Image 1 (cartoon, rainbow, N blue to C red):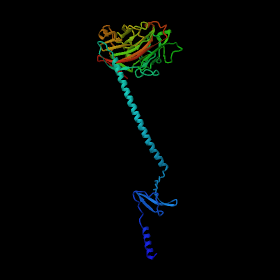
Image 2: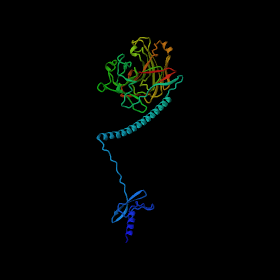
Image 3: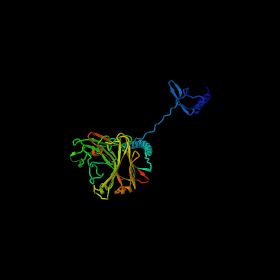
Image 4: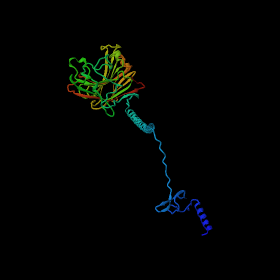
Length: 415
């Protein structure tokens, strides 16, 4: 071969080596195809391929990009604690938000229930509002439904349970009188725990060895005969006062001869002027040996003589046959009290009425233009209600007590 041909071939070979990296046709990937020079590089569809020895052949092989993981910074213990605190703060905030939402929901639900119960109670009270011919009974001023569990006591905001005592030793206007043969003990008064509520006075035969610790002293008027029973008495003296209005209670009376239950009122000023000057309104008293009857009375002083008793006392009383034994079910007993008259009702029927004008002609001192308080009790009195020889125990249940406006009059004061 001539030198010229040798030089031309060398030039062509050199020129081929200087050619740029081939680019394959877009229709076919070079992956796996034979290549000629190890480490040569070509491009196809934005991917780079390298000529590598695979086995005994040079083949185009896709370059795999190495993903470089970012270097995580090394945290100090303070940083770790701060991060944990921040994460816990987020968790606590979420928990607090969930708790607040749950509490708000519970409050809303409780409010809705309370509103419904109040509306239901208002509807019941409206339906039970008394209607008496000749009387305009207005808004409900005060009520006590004796709600609570059997482990609870009567509401001390309104009521005080009494032992036997005499004015002016304590509030309440005295408790045990004349031939009554009972101790009074707060433990004899309880709530029945029912849905509608009721206060219960339990009267029980006892002796000196088994009387309750809170029975107090026996009525000293009994002399050597002593007290044979424990019973209960509670009142609103110096807690709730009433002046005029329609005052009513729903009561189931105790059964058995000897019981002397009463729903009555005394003047708030009894510790200042004594009885009978303070005045007394007996809304109902029951002769339990005549269980079909209710009696109502007014006790008064014939003259204004503070703390003087008892040549100056008198009373007016009447009765009504209710046609059934009052210990076998609940009955309504009410006072309609106005500035110029007092009248008593049982089951919406008139028992007794007296006007101020007729009263003052008796003559009598009208003490009934001041504030009075309510008393509920069951005594044991053979002179009033017959023999108690067969009486072992009894219960008096008071469903509720309510006070309404009457002919535009009526005021209730709570302390």
